[in-house]
Each structure stands twice: as C-alpha cells, then as structure tokens.
Amino acid sequence: MKATQDNVEAIWVQALTKVYMRNQSLIKWLVYSRDALARVAKTADGVHALVDVSFSVNRGEAFGIIGRNGAGKSTLLQILAGTLQASAGECRIKGRVTALLELGSGFNPEFSGRENIILAGSILGISRREMERKFDGIAAFADIGTFIEQPVKTYSTGMLMRVAFAVAVSVEPDVLIIDEALSVGDILFQQKCNRRLRELIDSGVTLLVVTHDTSFVLNICHRALWLEKGRMAYLGKASDCVREYLTAMSAAAGNEINAPASLDGLAESTLPAVPPLDVGTCQRLGDGGVVVQRVWLINEAGESSTVYQLGEWCRLAVLIKAEQDARLVSGGCELRDRHGQVIFATGLRVVHRLFDEIPAGQCRLVVMRFKLEIRPGQYTLDVGCGAGEKEDNMWQRVVAAAVIEVSSTPEQEIVHGFVRLPYEVTTFRVAGPESMTARAT
Image 1 (spheres, rainbow, N blue to C red):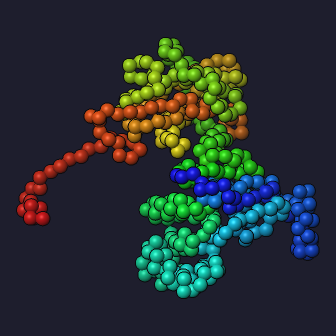
Image 2 (cartoon, one colour):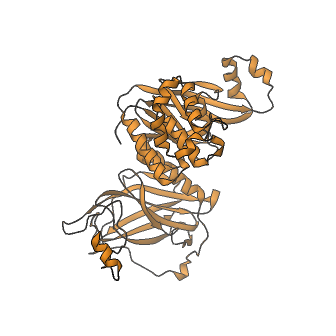
Image 3 (tube, one colour):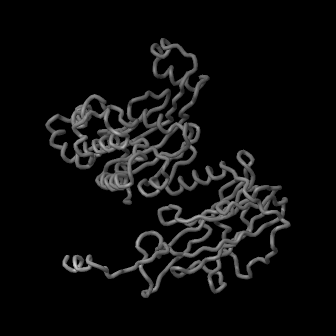
C-alpha cells in the first residue's frame, strides 16, 4: 500500500451534524434558512445521527470508516454523496464522485444490465458513445455472462453488486465512495475488486469506504475513522484505529461463563526464573480494574527471547493482577503482522476457561504455548486481560508488548503464504488400464 500522492485535500468535512427531528412540521424545514436549521439542530430534541464530525482526506488516499450498526456511518456517506442534507456543518469534495451506496440504488429493475450501465454513465455526465466504448470492459469485469442483457430484476444480489461495482470503477472517478457493497459476493470477485481498488488508489483516486471488515481497512486504507453513536471515537492510522475499535468491542462483549477455574482446582506455580519483558513504556488501553502485571516470552531452551526459528515453540506467561475484586477473569494474546492484522490469537476465552474470581490485590498466572509456523518476519504481540460481564466488564490491553522476529535457515522449507499448516503430499503410479492412457498423454 503506497502513501498518498500529495497533500491536496479531496474531501473536507467540518463539524458535520445530522439530526432527525421528532414531530417537526415540514413547513418549518422548508421555510427555515440553513443557518436557522443549524441553530435548531444544536438545541433540538431529536435523534443525533452525527455530531460535530470533522476530517479531511487527501487525493489518492484510502480512508475507512468503521463502527457498530447505528453509529452514523451510512448517514455520513449519504451526506458526502449528496443524497442527504446535513443539519449543520460543511463538507466539500473535489472532482467527479462515484458513490456505491445502497446496493442497486440508481438501477432501474425493468432495464437490462446494458441499459443501466448506459444510464449510470449519463447521470455522471458521460456520453452514450463513451459508455458504449467502455461497455465491453465493464461487462468483462462484472462477468455475469448473458445476464448482462437481461432485466436487472432477474439478478441475484451478487450479480447486482458485480455490475454496480464494475460501473463505479470504470467511469474514471476522482473520488470513489463505497458503503459495505463489497461484503456481498463470492471470494474470487472480492479479491478482484480489492486488486482493482489498489490500482485506482495508486493512480490517484481517493477512496472513502464504510465497512465492518476490519481486515479490509488494515490492508487497503491509510487512515480510518471510528464512529460511535454519531461521534468521533478515534481518527488516525488505519492500524491504530482498528486496534482501538476491536479492543473496545472485545471489552464491551464481556466474558462468557464457561467452566470457570476455581482457586481450589488450580495448581501452584512459581513465576518464570528468566527476566520478564520490559513493558513499562508500552501503550496500555482499558480501565485498569484488572491489569497485566508482568509478561515473559520463553523459547524452547527455557531462555527469555523475542527471536525464534520457524516452527519453534514459544511460551508466553502473563501475570494478571486484580486492582479490585474481579470475577470471570480472562487473559490472552494476539499476534499481528506488519499491517496490524491478527494472524493468531489464544487465551482463556478461546479455551472457554476463566478464573471464577480474583480478590483485589491478588495475582494469577496464565501460560500459553504456541508453535510459530508462520512466514519469517517481524510480528507484534499484544497481551491483555478482562473481567466481568457486559456492562460490568473491566479490562486492560498492552499494545505491542513485544516484537517477535521469526527467521528460517536455508535448509527449511519456504512458507508460501502467511502460515504453514500441517499437510501431506503423496504421489502414485497409476494402476490398471488407465496407466497406459496416462503415459500416452
């Protein structure tokens, strides 16, 4: 993923607010000026879908918007696309905008795919002759065969998305706005869409996308905005934004009651004799009701280490302390690649076994062991703990508690992909009459 090409703002949003009013007459909203509407929006008793949202996106930048359902993501995109008016604030977009919002919006169900493609171009100010010149490429990208000549009402949801996306990326937009459209469709088409989006971004197209797919944000977007109940919860690097969001969502989910481990059933263990990791300067998220006291990384030789060979076992020990009485306590870790994508996670929640309680001031030790069958390179390790249920939860996460280096020797097999799964490869000589056919070919 390349950096943005320049610092020219393609999208500018300042103090954007959207309020859906309760029991307000249509006449009032027709008569009031925009300034009057803004004043009413700040004091009105209504549903605040957006509140003082401000950000900018540079030309050639991929910008993601994440958040739970009802956070205001789609409302924001509709305002930017011009299909919805803000109650207050301003926004500007430079260049031709192509928006892929509600799936199939703008398509006439009675028209064929070809006719809708021509129509979509005319709405964007592109001549019929130009759209006919582009048609073969659009049809090839959509890849729905002869259905392109059939009425859109006969299309499946996936087919409709294919045509809509093919049009959106083929009309040479300056700004492309997408709202969850890529969540529909098969994996092969999604991969093709991702490749095309990367090409567009590299050519200077600005991408603004709303999605629940955090891996998409990590791998495609430069920066991201997390919206929570219409307000800006976090704005920054895509990896940092996704990490903050997932951490908060994990904490909000609480811990499930699954075979808690009582104190009477626990074996005693001394703390590791090797030096712990230095996590004093690491970023810590959470409320601190339960905390990560110390962390150890131990290799197969029993030594403290952050450097491992491909296929070597790693032992992670986490000492959890309760700053206040805590019940249903969990501890775990996440291993992330250079894009911030979680490639492995484990812990007490994964094995459905929690500490039933930890009195204030006491500690418990969680030891995890995993084999590093992953592509050589550097990875960050987050460790954390949580306690309670739903609204009563407490938690803490230590971000990048360690940077783990995985290397391989020349004699070791190359890892093709992210991980090396257990596998078998077998060859056979064909028996029977088919063997002659096999030799002939």
